[in-house]
Image (tube, rainbow, N blue to C red; front, side, top):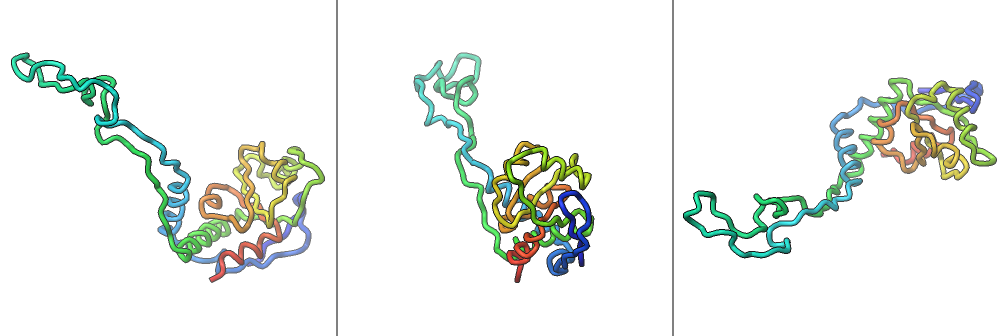
Length: 209
């Protein structure tokens, strides 16, 4: 598969890039995508939720009333979970939600997500660019030239570029990521992938067998 290379004004450069069919033309595996996205979201969870059980509360353990003869249910201490301010039964405690997936499955998930984007024609190759100084207007003009200013866009760059990053960080629908950090969740979360020309080779490197 070959894709046209565009400049930042949205015009064709009369050059093309050959996209590896083993990365952008495979039959997507939805189960692999599900597991990889599940892992990504689980690993982002802090797991700091906590509640106090009966033994952890500060309070009197005096029996509130006699066991029998009151006409009501028996009652123990004020820390009883049935009372306001009491303990919580089987409440959440800090835990680690991380789990591991093997590299081959994560690779399959990535190339499945990239294949979905390729089939939907939502991958645009733009020649490498940078800005002399951080300026949001410059990047907005770039998005307008491709008519994607109102869509969620993921810019894939070959390496960190501070001026480009600072130019788009205030845009809610735009994210930037290095090609070496590309992951299934970010690919699927964006409506369009704006890939710098040099990033194509980097993407191939991380998805080689």
